[in-house]
Image (cartoon, rainbow, N blue to C red; front, side):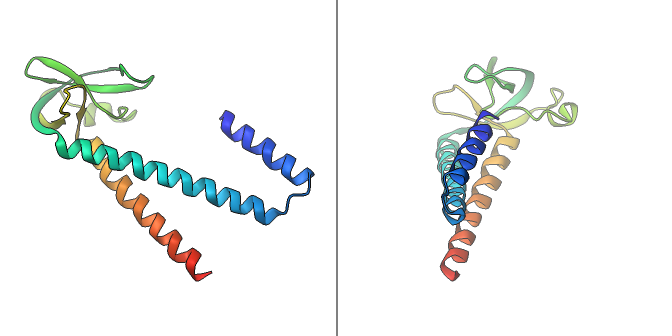
Length: 145
């Protein structure tokens, strides 16, 4: 939220100082492009971690705060030990998504610090595909201008 306020102040200052609007549009497009590039890089790192992870059978344990962030994550029990999911838990329909009554398959990272559940796998896959597709579409549109 603070970032949006800072960007609004910068835009207002640029308009007051007489910066051409086309430069502001170009800066906005560049910021969006950097955000997409950062997302694709992050998801690529997660893909590499997922590829090197081992498939294990687990049971959902509970939802609690992540040891690395301020978000709540799903915790899974594998062979008596409990591991956190890499991504935050889904805030809605928890009783449908996270069921402790039946086992599921997760990907346990090599260093055994976290797991990827089916929702993490879907998020990484769809995010990566949509991110790359958006970057390619933007590049095609820019070259045709």
